[in-house]
Image (cartoon, rainbow, N blue to C red):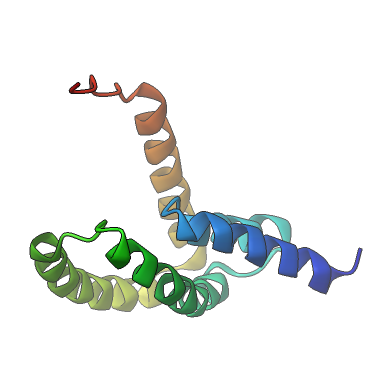
Length: 124
């Protein structure tokens, strides 16, 4: 199987996961750094370009089904933009090894949190 076919399959699968809100971009970032050996900064840039069309295609469906709370979304978007600008500036200043360690620690934290999270009781 050619490398372009593996990359296309990885992009397609993570695109499907992204449409569900699962974090396909994070999985794509892991694929690019761990399996292709791509430098973290380059993988993050590609991941950002990947995310824009993936989000744009999923968003109309989420709006149509009422899954977007506009009162929550507006402040989240505004503060998210400010946080993104700050974090992008910081990420470009960090050493790649340190950046990879921060990202790895983040993934471990999220994984442990998900494993230990208690499911809320359903309200029926």
